[in-house]
Length: 104
Image (tube, rainbow, N blue to C red):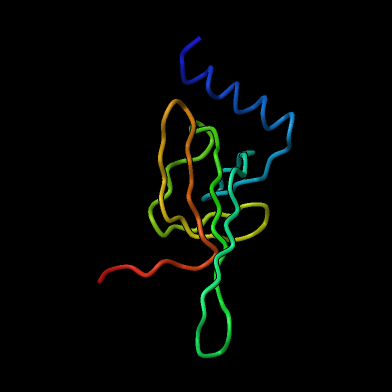
């Protein structure tokens, strides 16, 4: 068994034991593991605002690598990709419900 297959099997076992989230990207769908949900608060002239960030792990053979700022759906919620890292057959997606600002 290849090392990537071993990591994917481990991710699948964790999802089976603890539950997962549905991740969709351009017609592809996978069950992933939500490992972080980070609610951030910012003050502005109308009170408090903020965003929620997510880190989700999915099998790399089930979801293509999304571009930065691309839209994916995590458990029915559209989010924007802030970063993507792939290692050992697992794709780690860092996402935010607020669209990132490009270029400065």
